[in-house]
Every structure is written in structure tokens, then in C-alpha cells.
Amino acid sequence: MSLIPLISGLGNMANALRRFCQEYQVSYSTFDPAELLGNPGSELSIENYPNIVAIHFGGQGRLDALVRYCEVRGIPIIQGSTNVVVPSSNKIVIINATNLALPMVRFMLAFPAFARTISRGMTTFVIESHPKDKKDVSGTARAVVKALDLPEDIIFSARKPGEQVALGMPPDRYHAYHKIVFTGQSVKISVETEVDSLEPCAKGAILLAQALRHNQFLKPEIDARGLWVPPGLYQITDPRVMKILQLTTG
Image (cartoon, rainbow, N blue to C red; front, top):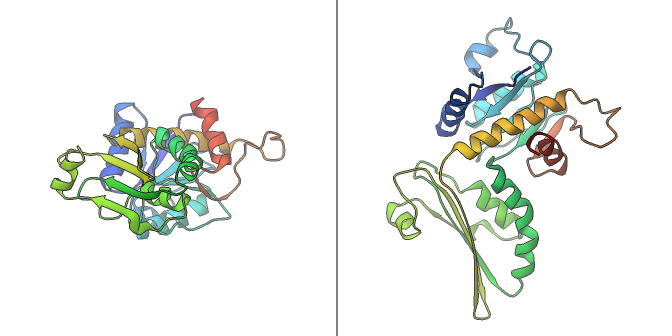
């Protein structure tokens, strides 16, 4: 039974996910709060469609409506937006994944231990660059400074064309660029990451959704390997989430 993503959102990332689904012939549905919540007869549910996973790229109001809708129907959620308050749940799995490019997720798992080791006696600052329509600070940059117990005011967000050109980034196309710099003791160490399209995030969303769909069929009482993820709120880097993701991606 094939995965059916329930896509919530109308912005760039939600549309990129729709394009990815169309290109790779993945059937999907769109979450419309006004239409679905106003239609009690809409039985888009795990009981009828155990292959449904909701994927959210939108604002707070749409997320709150999606959680209410999915809790009633037992549908798990992947939440990919920054600058929203993600509610917890004891009825469904909600995974907070503000970066769904899986190589970047693995980087974020490995990077903090490395950074804590080399940052002793050094000054750290973070630069991030995204298209100008991204108004908030990058979730990846926030995660980096949080992992190092540093304040967010060390992050510089480049949104002006001149700033982006100086970093070697094209102002006129999508990019997600991060540079973490450690300086001190006459030494400078820099780590750079760059994602130059939305496709890695769309692909990561589908792979994680497939892992969650498989998770629906695992019974916790017979799963001796600890691979079942019970209802609750998780970060994508949670070891339990990474285990079920590894089952799908290898």
C-alpha cells in the first residue's frame, strides 16, 4: 500500500513537495482546514487509509487545525516550519523537523560534539543566508548555537543581495547556506554547508513519511528492538526517529 502524503501549506516548501510528488508519481492530498474540518463525513483516517502521513509547511493557525484534525483520525504529522509553536500530543506521533535534507540532519547529529571540542578558548559566530522571503532566522543556525549553549545574537542572517553575493550565494535563486566560524589563538576554523534547492528537503519529507507509515504497523508489545515510536512530540534527531528512518533509507 503506497504512502499518501497529506500536505499542509501553500508556500514555497509545500509547493516544492507537491512538485516532487508529481515528478515521482506519489499520490498526495492537500489539507484545507476550512473544507476538511467543516465536513464531519470526511473519513480520511488511519482506519480507512493507514498509508496517510501529514506533512506541514505553513503557519501557526494551519498547524493547530492540522493537529486537531489528525488527532481525531490517528494520522501522524511531520512538522517542517520554523517560527511556530509545535504542540505535543498523547494521541499521535508529531515529528518536528525544520530541516528535512537528510545529509544536513546527519550533519547536525555529528557536529555538536566536534564543535564543543574545538571551540574551547575560541570565539564562535554563525552566518546563514537564505532567500529574502525567509523572514526568520534559520532553524539550522538556531540549532547549532543551542547545541553549543550560545546566544542566538551571534547569528548573522544575510538577506540583502550584496550580503549574499559577498558570501558567494546567488540572491536570485534558492539557497540555504551556513558558515560556522571558530577564531582565537591565531587560528581560524570554518565549517560551511550549502543546500542549493528545495528537492533534498522534499525527498527527506517523503522518506520520513514512509518511515512513519511503517511505524503505524509495528506493535510495541512485540518489538524487542525498540523501533516503535509511540505517540508524542519528537525532534527529527531523536534516536528513535533516526532508527525508524534508517529502516527506510538504509
